[in-house]
Structures are given as structure tokens and as C-alpha cells.
Length: 230
Image (cartoon, rainbow, N blue to C red; front, side, top):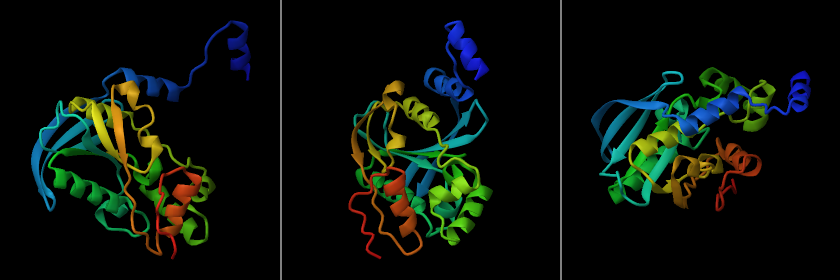
């Protein structure tokens, strides 16, 4: 309150550390490409590029199929790290399914990008906290309230790094595979344009149906057509 009063008295603007980081992400290059390799997958051959964040040295990946630089309306998926879903096939979420669906769709067209962002585990709260949140969900809390009960944000992910990776790959216009509006808000600030949003609607199961409903009803995810009659 004292800072606000001082700023008002002297006609000064107030900013936060989060605002400064956001500004840097939009106006400075905060990732650098450090390695690449050919990655043959069950869906076809991708080139994998490793990007290091200059903010915290986190390592992010881009899986690229085809010559995407300069192409219009490229298929894109920006995917948040989810160890339990992506690696172990957890049925609690739809993360692994969305990743696989995106890679399959790209392979069908022969051109596209999956950006894999680390540091996003549990919508940014980290793996251990995510497991603690799962325990609360076993007691009846949904995915939103479980985070709040732990004193943690509902979703602390930022996507500026992902946007910068797309720019580095030469992407300008894209067809974006996502159900989450937060993933494409502010793309214009990076010189990117989403010409189409392609939904990825999973087939729910008894383990994730409450999670999917919560994402739709409390987090604004666009899950129209979700068959939740379980």
C-alpha cells in the first residue's frame, strides 16, 4: 500500500517481477538452439531440436517433421511436460493422448511441429506437488481445488518460450492443436498467427472424467463434444 501511495503521489508506474519477465519473453530472445538429431518414431521421422532457456537453463524440445520454415498454416502442438501421462500412460489425464494424437496428425500430413515445454509438470507446480494434489483428488477435491488447498496456483504455466521456439523454426501462421485458450492468447506479440484451432477431444475414462469436466467448466478449456456420459 505504501508503494502504491508513493507511486500515485509522484505519478510513477508500478510493475511486478512477473511483468518484467513477461516483457523480456516478448522482447528478448530467451532461448537458444543447442543440439539436434534425427528421431525415428512410431509415427514417422522427426528432427528433434533442443533449446536452452537463458532464464533458468531449462531444456525444451521441438519435434519437427518436414521443412516447416516459411510454410503457411503449419500444424503445431505446444505440449506441456507431463511425466505421468506422457511416459507412464496415466489415465488420470489426457496429456499423453493429446501428444500422441498431435504426432499422428502431423505424420498424416507430413509437416508440423510439436514443441515440448519442460517445467510445466502439474500445470507448473512440479511433480511432487502434482502427486500431493492427486492424493487430495482421491478424497473428492477436483484438480482446481486440490492445487488451491496446497496453497499453489491453479495454473502457473507461461508459453512465451514456446512462441519463441516457433519463431526460431520459421513459423508465422499455424493451425494450432489445443483445447486451452491460454496457449494461444498473445501470440500476435511474437509475430505468430493462429489461422485455425484444431481441437483434441479425448475419449474419457472413469479415471479422468472429473478432471476433464473441471477443465471445461472451471478452467475454460474448449471441450465441446466431450462424451462425458460415464
